[in-house]
Image (cartoon, rainbow, N blue to C red):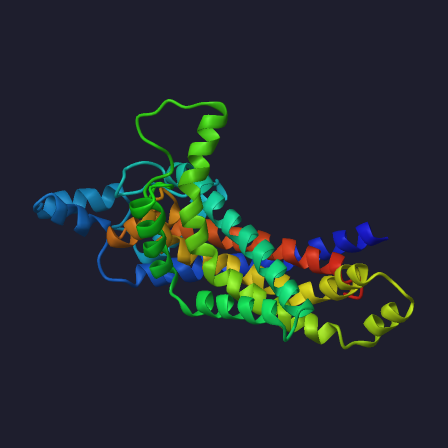
Length: 327
């Protein structure tokens, strides 16, 4: 019964996501085409100038000489064939550029989100269980500092402390250049490079989820079913985990799904700060070079990722709270 309920919820959510994705595709295309200039102007300025005939030839090669309607039809036709077009800046297929960088960005985003959820929920649970006592006050102060401090400043201070002063962790790149590592050494090298970017990107969300978990658990603790569970003589740990924490996680999981898109925006700053070869830096390069084909591909992929994550969060909420109805 529960599996059929979750299956109906999945189908309904996916059908609702289709017009959303289509609207995002059209809106992104129209907004980017309204921006003055294109990739050919950037290429001409980088090459020191170009003749009118050369500019016209480049625009014809990349399809930039077509009308807005013709460009839109061509773009939708390419999408129907799972083709994101050619990048004028790099002169390679957009899908190839994205797939080369996507695993790095997913590693950074998923690791940051998981770390933020685990540490934030654990800290919030401790704060709620020790409310008014010194663990609650100490963690509340730490959470307030993380919540109020910009992420890029935390990243810079982490580089100064762990890379420059202590020399424990690398400050740039995804792997050590010039080393042919394998097995456990390869994994350890990647972990060392990912620690600082993940801590930087997740710091704000750790504080946010901790505060939200604390407030939600304190609210749930006052409900009748919690008092009933305590009156039945259930172990306090079971009451806290099975009854209080499980119901308190509903707003946390809702925000986590919404924050996945924000993590991609924050990844652009973090990837630039730590020289991380991901979609964030690629997006910045696409904006600076006015590579609209590449930017459209990144925006489309980001939208699809957000849709998938939100569907997953809907399913998680339905599992956490069986009261959620599926019509």
